[in-house]
Length: 125
Image (cartoon, rainbow, N blue to C red; front, side):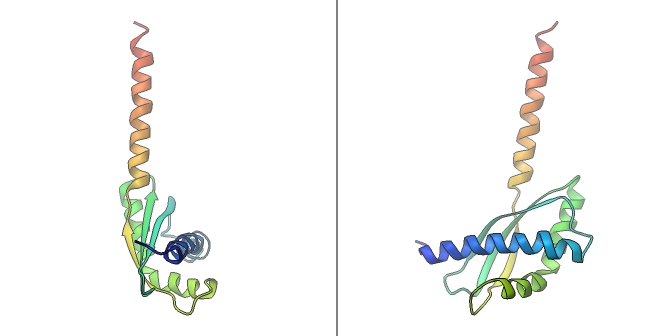
């Protein structure tokens, strides 16, 4: 069972990592494209490691992969920025993981829209 402090820290890291990516990192490299979302942060109980789940919605799979790769490559920069933002003695080592939540949701949305189009078009014959 996770502690209340652990859950609070995870939520703070989720917001802070998103802020760093969307402000500082996005302007540091032109490889960050599409919509980037930090869907979850999971800080270990010893505060030494954090799993950061990233979802990227881009125009195609290649652009999404390139964006995720750029984020992973700049993990030390993100950690450095977090050290200045967070009010804790240590900043955990960041481990970025791919989260397909946004892609999956977008795919389901498109399928539902297509079904509605098909139903509307099918009744007019």
